[in-house]
Every structure is written in C-alpha cells, then in structure tokens.
Image (tube, rainbow, N blue to C red):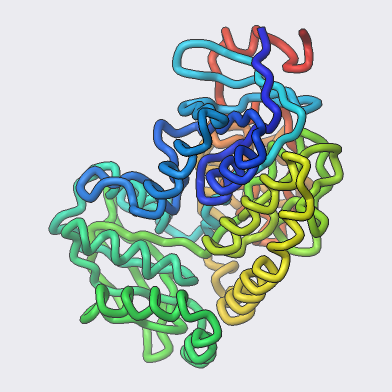
Length: 425
C-alpha cells in the first residue's frame, strides 16, 4: 500500500515547515514528514524546560490554517528512495510514500574534527550537547568549555547557561581580526545584529577567546580537562564537559539516492539547484542547508520558494529571489570570516580514532586513496552512522572524498528492509 501526496516535504525544520505551508496555500495535498516526534528541526528543537520555541509554534500554527491540506507525519524515518517514492520506517511499521513533487529539507549535521581524547565520555558536539540539554540531560552545575567555530557556539553556550551549566569559556578558532570584521558588517542585517546583541547579553562574563582551539582532551574514564592553543599561550582548563563543533555539513544522502546532482566545488558537497530550487531530478526540489549552509533566514525563504514551485506556482517562488540572494550573502560573509585554521586539521595523531563506530584509527587508514577501499579493509564508515561522521572528517582532513550513498540510509528493522524496493508496487 502506497500513500500518495501532491507534494511530499522531507524534514520539518524551518525550511520544511515553510515549504509545506507554501505548497498548501495553493491547495496541494502535502505530506510533511520528519524522523523526530516534534516539528522544528535542530534549530527549533523542543526544550523540556522552556517548551517549543515561539517561531516553531507560530510556523506550525500557520499549517493548521491550511484547511487540512497538510498531513503531519512524525517519527517517519526515510530508509530508501527511488523515483519520488520513499520507503519510510515508523515506530510500528514500514510504509511507502509517493508524490508528484518532493521538497528535500534535510538540513545539516555538525562538522567534528578529531583530536587526542575526542572520544572520551563528556566530549560532545556543540549542537549535540545543546540538543541533549533541551531534552533534559543534566548539565546543571557542570563545568563546560565550548569550542570550535562560528556563531552556533554562542547559541550552544547560551542554552547551556540557561540550563544551569557553568560555561568556563568559548574558544573560537577564527582570529580576533576576522571576528571583529564580521561583527562590523552586521548592521547590514538588522535582525542578525539584534540576535547577536541578545546573545552578548546572555553570555556576559564568559571569556570569549579568539584564535584558540582545543588541542587535547584529558581523562581516563571521563573528561577532566582540555589543553587549549591560545594566542597568549597554551592553557589547561579543568572541566566536566567539552562542546566542540566546527560548523555544519549539508545532509545530501537522500538527494544523492534520488539521483540529484551535487555541487562539489567545496569540500562538503551540497545539492545543486537552479534559481527555482529545482534539482537535476525531475520534480524534486531542495531547500535550506542541504543547498549549502546559509542559516535560518535563508532556510525559511528557500522553503517557501521550493513549496511554491513544487505546487506548480513558479511566479510566487521567483518573487522571493531577491530575499534569498540577500540571505545567501550573509552565508558568504560567515564562510569568509570563520574559515578554518589549517592547524585544526592536523591535531589527530596516528592512534587517534577516526571512525568511532568501528574504532578505526588514523594510522589504519594510511595508504588508502578512496572511501570504498578503506571501508572494505577496515570497516571505516560501516557503523551505525553510515560514515556521516568519519566520512565528513576524512574529507575535511583531505584524506579522500565522501563515499557514495547506499540503502539503508539509516539503521532499520529487518521487517522494514524486507518490504523491499520503494518503487515496487
């Protein structure tokens, strides 16, 4: 049995919510699915203490006014795809969903760079610890160092402080001159300037160290401290938790499985789209971070554009082009001023684990020039994350580019896999 929609939107973050609303405004029957139980994606994740962020509630309330044109499908994990038909796993069963047009709003994941001690308990991604804190993971009273690159570090630190953590410092790898130059241009985006001012107030008293990065994490059974390279000299900071993240990487696996062309002009590919956000696969559109990391504002605009276009109203999408271009210029500014210091790519030693799922060290990968050969010999990338972490890391370290995508996209029940090819009636 296959459920069919006029427009199927994959991902219920800011881009997906905007796409669903735009498509439904033209009377299309829309299916909006997400692997999570709640809408909002990573950026608008529900907080057990403070509830769902107001923008997410507002966006979802607007969907409720579409006269039933949008069907919300939570806890629907895409396992495989073919010809605009998805094999999806739910908590109870496997289902097939097909559509006339599809919008991919699959978002992004964190970029993690390895260093000695990065696999210790207590070391997490900056976005990961933010999500854990919102879900109720206890951080109150914990000593936390936040490190890496980009404005997302500030958001993570603010969330941790709000949940009672003692944030000891923020280590930003970009030099002070680059951060200052970025800040001086925020006046061109007033909403961003206001957001930065609010974060500055919430983080008052927390040291913000530019040009610094974590070189090593210490501990036997759990993290007890970190060594930091700082322009003023090396530092050792005793801590209970380390939240580290070096930006975001587009999630393109589903797009690749659907045959969409990818843009490989940067280290981490994104989905190639035209001015109406059409991919190279007929009737498949992409929006938000999967098209290149650009932030919340761009995701919402692109979601609306893709929703209009997918519903067959390209003029409504075209009208939003100037707004999209402006939002994308901000993304270019971020990429320019928060470019990664080459030293952050050289921290891993020969015995540093690169593939955390299969315990594969950097030395074990010496001599391999492509992901497939490394996978066959070492099982690197064959664990639960399907190479999303180590594959991205190895591409960033310039060892070899990302490998291909094969089903299942995520670990799935045998009963789901037995359902077979999603294109089979």
